[in-house]
Image 1 (cartoon, rainbow, N blue to C red):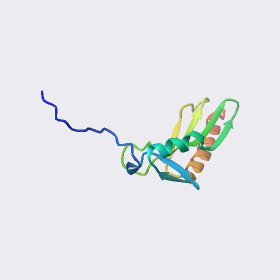
Image 2: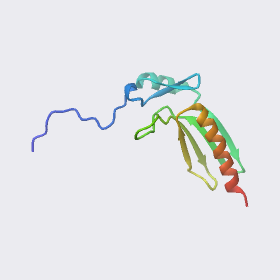
Image 3: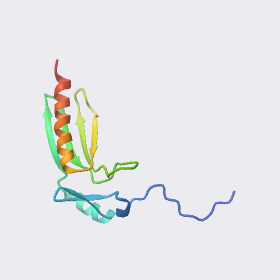
Image 4: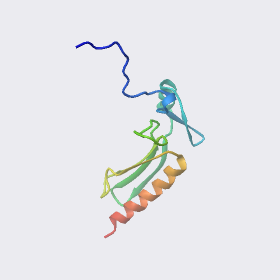
Length: 116
């Protein structure tokens, strides 16, 4: 079997494909890998963090890598639930404002899940 000498790329991880992002004034900005890595080392990526009840934590952060694996806007913010009845629940967003709104909604959802 002969294999052609072609470069095959399953995924493109360049700024042109909107994979790496940094935050500037609450807005995601597409950048190259090196710029992203340098920024990521020291950036404060936390959007919000709340303790719900005695054991549950809801955390929302800027993840900086596009987790949209299809068509649509880049998903670069993430809310995660740690511990409690909704442990592992996750939501992703495209904007800082949506992340704040989604975080508050997840906190409410966790509180409701903990109700007797």
